[in-house]
Image: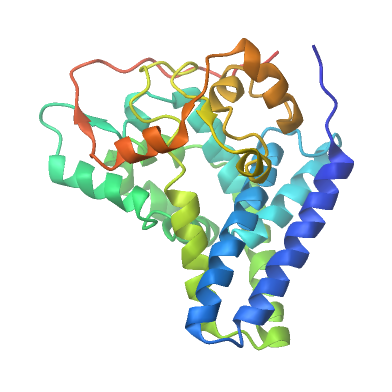
Length: 302
């Protein structure tokens, strides 16, 4: 069964996200920190929708026209803020390497540096991972060779991801970073943003986004396609995530637009409680001797 891309609704959502985020930043910029903090919490959920929209663009289902899809994805990336092209390439690697040794964050082998694994894991859960994404965008824009030096080549994850950027991709990343810098400089000047309040509000998003990034994959089977969960969340949260809680459905059929995920959900595995899964993450990574699957040559496609 084929599903149409709800591009008009997606455009309305992007516009609504931009208006909402700018409004909250304008109020938070001139408020004491104890007012900016709850505004940041509210903004963090709006930016989860922004990320979900960018995720649609990563799979070319945000808009039916490829150029519009890329431009709109880049617009969502500006609010993250990070390069959309970097996200798109990295997310493609994720779909090819899910639950392989390249994405083995929740378990560790005998002989692994356990302290490092715990540091990586709790850095993910507490939001410390988030600032690395904008920083990675900037480093890629300045010089991709930085991320191809020995420390990155030796890492299981980055050794694969940072090999995937050709000249066109790097040029797109540079253009996206320039657009992002221009947007944020203009917004900062126009609204006279308090940078400390801005950092506080985005820290709320960083925690909210980062802590959710592995919740649908942790402790699932070491299987590239089936190593994911459908999660049980409230109706409002489902709308905020644009049905992103149906992650197993998404990994089996990554070409589906977000409006189709809940329709396909009943034919998939029953969802598990988000909170049960989430709290299990805080117990830390687990030892394993199970070998990981072989990465796919390409993403699954219809």
